[in-house]
Image (cartoon, rainbow, N blue to C red; front, side):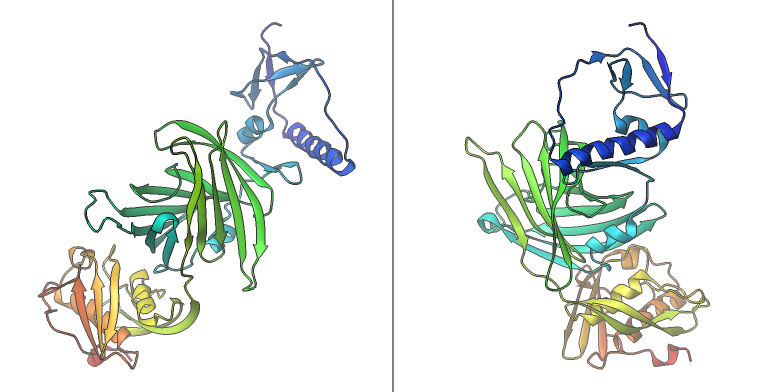
Length: 418
């Protein structure tokens, strides 16, 4: 056959092909018919273009008709191709940023902590440290540590850095770690919408050796628990291999269990980990204090905050880090500051911040006073807190710049605006 050029410029033809494809799958499924037949196909040599853009994919001829993979053409039109392995329905949809649906699968506020236990006394802890939202992307940044079962003798790095990113209709995990019992892929699509049994996708990812692998993901189970939340079981299988990974993802929590095939020696085995503590989640009204834009006074801002395991003082400090919702007030905590810990004993609340608390502060006595009065007045709203000791990286520091921090601070009543 001579080289030819086929131009597919009419989107209606693509839509009609999708409808016919879906009906063919459904009719065979519903009627129980065997739709297979032996056909003769020819490797085609035509060049296919969509709106003058070449389709970089194989195509073939059957009875004089050129056939092209559905995904290769529709993605050039800016559409998304979906496939449900249960109902056998292929679909073409407008790409939609599914942030509202997928964000329901993760904690809604920073400070959430996960603790996992698993095979052979394995364990790790992690904490949600930030949520970054962009117009078409939301990123959840997580930091943690794997339990060191060597009692300090190992030279390995036990730290964990994870991110969950919502883009389009996908929730994507990326990780940096050395000893975590998790995926052998540093980046993987955990789940895709629609969140129904049978949703299926394929992607190319690199394994721990840098080899590109084809992974098939599928939602295999959706279960409504007695608590009213849903759990989604997701299976990832590597093509041309026995290797698999399976996760259970719970609404408002994330991954609650993980297992995979360990390909060690002559006898591969299955192992994994599970969530050993599910945090209690409540919504509480909390009074926060933020400075005015003239750095003269701090003013009340009453907010409803997500509180984990009744740690309301911790939620309040995280609310300060998140910043004010008011257009007339200013945020008080330096950018990048992380809350490392908060403890209460005998009326003394000890708050430990990361070094960004000092390094990123804009300086000046007025600004420093606004930061401190924002923290102390917020915490002393709770009747059980009378004094606040501020630490940086676990250490008492002499000053934040001009104001002494080597002693606990009392409420700044005269700096509260009325």
